[in-house]
Image 1: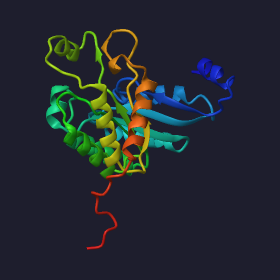
Image 2 (image 1 turned 90 degrees about the vertical axis):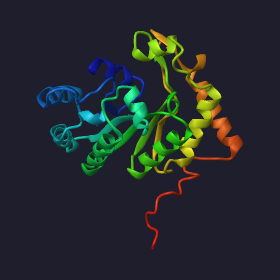
Image 3 (image 1 turned 60 degrees about the vertical axis):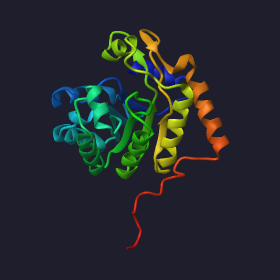
Length: 245
């Protein structure tokens, strides 16, 4: 951690986030997690502890532990939802339901942590209604941020086998852009967008981002939004908060 931090400091960066991103970073005994989190908070330049995990791996003991760190740094919890479609969640073998996601999100917010949600808007088993409903659920839960991913296929996975057999069809880039825009239109304007497209690994990826660079897709999304004269939250009119009977 210190070696990497020193490299960044030479570039003028003075504040850092201890980011536990890959895989499920609450899947261990609490004492083990505490040691790992502590090791990352090397000095006062670390201003946030960010932990990414799954809805089914957020016990009260883990949240109690994170609350201890909240006294020293900001705490952000990233939860992978991917979709509200329970049938798709089952196909993906996510090991959690929509109810478990909602429960974990509510408990994270009650603790005063930042809540960031991960979604994939072009899952082959989802349609536009699923995409829009996902945006609505995330908005209703008062998420602080969202990371939008494009589906990619990695060699050796169950999805790769399905892809190679022709059992799944991944939509075109144009449809992906359309789904992203519809998602954004229905998303609360107060939610920060952390990501608009995935960054597939260089090694082992069978399909990723239609062979296009990440920045190209982002640029195309922005161009299409300008063409449609639309914006995040344009259709955020479905919650009754603050409306008198």
